Image (cartoon, rainbow, N blue to C red):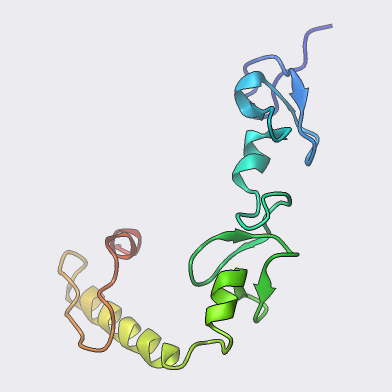
Length: 136
């Protein structure tokens, strides 16, 4: 019988089993300290570090599990830190800022994707990452 292959890379023999998902993995894809495969390890809640994340904080992006995250709406989750800062969601003025950003983005797209977005006095400048990910 040939040895069982790692369920992540499918190249090396499996030497351990993940305590959360049960994957058989090679030593390269196993975190012995946590007892987790590389997939589960990369998707752990960034607050408690024990459970798999089910969402990311809509403000800061931290991964949160069901126990640590605060669900504000069916699609909006917050980490405990951001929930403490934003007791009212969305924060006052967020709708106006989102509308202004949408207008700036749509104007830029109409002019051509290579041009920079116009500056607005009330809305923050979009990040480089936003511009790179939303070009056509």
